[in-house]
Image (cartoon, rainbow, N blue to C red; front, top):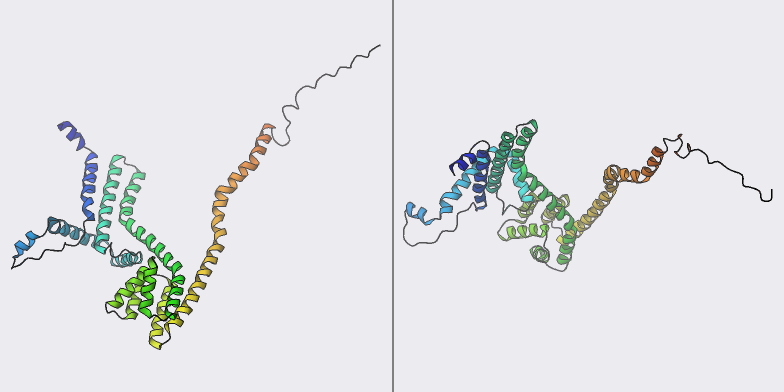
Length: 327
């Protein structure tokens, strides 16, 4: 058994064992970075008693995770952290992915990638493994950024596509006699898409006492859709100048629908250019092989264009005259 232990802890296996231990330790990252609600106790409690009433997770795990998150924040530039925070908000994941949790996961994945890169290098040292060992930590550190960017882009496209339909609903509801908040509430209840979720946040902010203009401006901080930005600005201008909201909804609905039609036409015009590269790289070579392949085989078998076939060099058959009867 001792020999097996020495074999396990010798050479590059140490790095593998360390990586496995780090993976096991990283499994606790899912723990929420908030202390659980404490129970109410009657009578004064000392600080020591208060700490003992807390769970082991709140006393040991959460402080360690917060320290790791603060350490990861130092490695992330301020400008990049602000961009990442906005991307998380645009992806609609701010509640489930606070910045402390994002930075913690970035640190864990980066260290895991570093251990994997070092293990690859010491296992088989080569220039390719050196490049791979440097790229794996970078991929681990920037992986979440890439995921949030793609999720934010997809969500913004969904918001842009559903905006004209929801503006039509708002126009009909407001012209039927309901007010601004009631119209938004009706649209939020009858739809289930990213835009209705953003409208629900706006409605919740207004009900908590935030002015309508500030609630709508906070919507622009979580989205990046040009037509939605124009809609919010038109609403704020209508509040200042006293323009009927129903008229604003109708105008913005027509413009949003026209914008969506133009966007569809633009994508249709780009389609032939996008199909050009697959056509040249994959379809045309296969077509040429299917058409010119048999001809090339025949040309090769006949020894070129001017050559003669093997049957041309064969000796001609001797023609004998037929015997004449009665001769």
